[in-house]
Image (cartoon, rainbow, N blue to C red; front, top):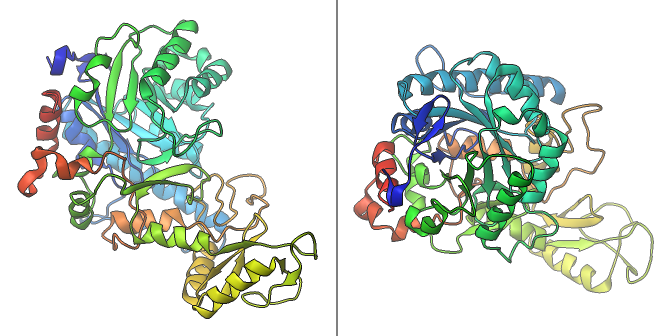
Length: 468
């Protein structure tokens, strides 16, 4: 028995704790962390988002994209992704030693999501218990799961999103839907499913939202023993006491994304682990700079502050003199046909004088001002695009049809593949995107981590089961 009568559930043909390791893409969860989580009796999650492969000596193979065109680089990316995830699943399965279960996690919005998922499942038969998938509306998830006879666990942030997926696709394969992950859009790390109806700075209590999700599931005839997995902001089980064995909510499991980052088996570099211990409340920012167009949550480090500052150096323009746009912009751009307000002309001139001499157009008829070094980095990163998303705002890549979104590339964003690969493999934590959930400040407050203590995954799972 765990905290307050938390009981094991049947999953993947065996009893497991209803504790799920959240999958963190681009090598922040791998075979070591997920294999150990399963070995401890929980559900480990191998991230199948650009996972690492290894050479004959066991060294990580750097993902170098040397093909000439974006489309060819995208094909290299899919190859890397399949090889890496297959390798990770095989290793995780071995570490688990027949305990717990191994899931894989994919983002539907990643480039080539479908061929990657199919390629991985093809080569890992009998090893993967289920596929968790969010970021977008993955209608095809159930049909792919049916083809390979694995469970699927959709990730949603509202009852409405679930109902749309169920009506259109999942109702045809009800027997393989093992759980529904409710990912709280205000608390979870990484990409968040905030809809236009929800306000980024006005978090809602998850209880009524999860209750509404359960009511929707019941209305569709889904049994209460199909658990809802609460994800985002979960730290101490004692905080969720009234959720366990609660007839209103039905079966509940809990997903941990942030806490497993600080374990011995966690593959993230030591510098990143150390930084987690120093975070304060409010140090994780829900922002919109991601090239996916989704909101996402990450540590508000210098990298993120720089993106905030860049967007603040931004003015709207017209191609013709119109309304309040009565003066021509004379800094940052070549050509005479950028009309702005007199006030914005003053601002632009002051930015230019401060060294932000280059104006870059955005898809929203605005111009942002950057320094020449930043301009060169942005242009190079856009040119080097390897198509890691299905649609990328930063490079205007699209992974099908004519391979372009048809919009101007957006200099207010960044190459997410480059920065996540870099931080996961030892790059400077101040110069890269550092995803984290909003409860990450608890590392500093939780006595479990005092005096620099780092638990093994087994010690963490045992600790969680006590309620702490």
